Length: 267
Image 1 (cartoon, one colour):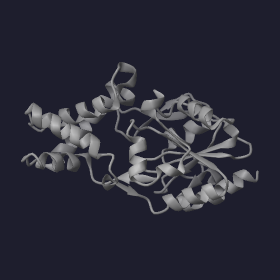
Image 2 (image 1 turned 60 degrees about the horizontal axis):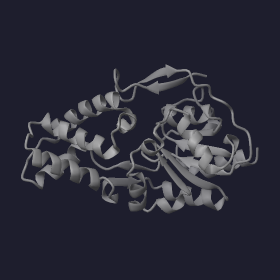
Image 3 (image 1 turned 120 degrees about the horizontal axis):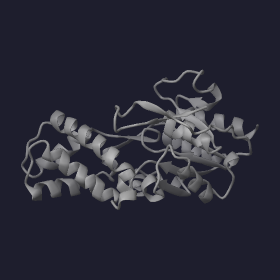
């Protein structure tokens, strides 16, 4: 099976294109569960435009949310193309990358004062760590607790910058995990199997002893499978049919995950 990977340079953020990563079927006793974070365990509250406008209002500026949102989409897509994975391979950090995104977004909305741009960008970057900017899905903590009660160890593999641990700590989720790997830290992002190879090194076991759950068909389900890991797709919106994802590898709620993992454990 070929893996389809997103291309934010030429297409919309949710469109996919084909790459050649084989998907291997994993068989073995289960010991670890790896987790995606954003849109799997929790989601961002409010758009980037609203968050940036909120910070600008503190400095006496009144901006149009829709205009800022549209500018953000353009800038974000451009930066993701030119500086993928927060520009790590090009000498940038996640903080520098995001600060530039915020500044360029506001500049397109006619904000030119360097002090205002820097203040909004800095505040937006650091405030994003706070739990007030996130909604934890109701099925997240019960699933984490149930998986732990099954004797499984948990880790995180997520396309995220180095704020990830702080976000998880603020949301009360960090203590569930033995390790957290962000794509910025790893220097490589999903769907590359290399980030899963790093995770397997942290697990200290082979791929057939590990499962991964996430909401993205390519980045989570297919990419983990290409590394020999048991991939489980969280399909909250019923987007995928059995022809694309076998029934035993697809769930619509994290409530289903523990029983699905038990099936793997008893194979």
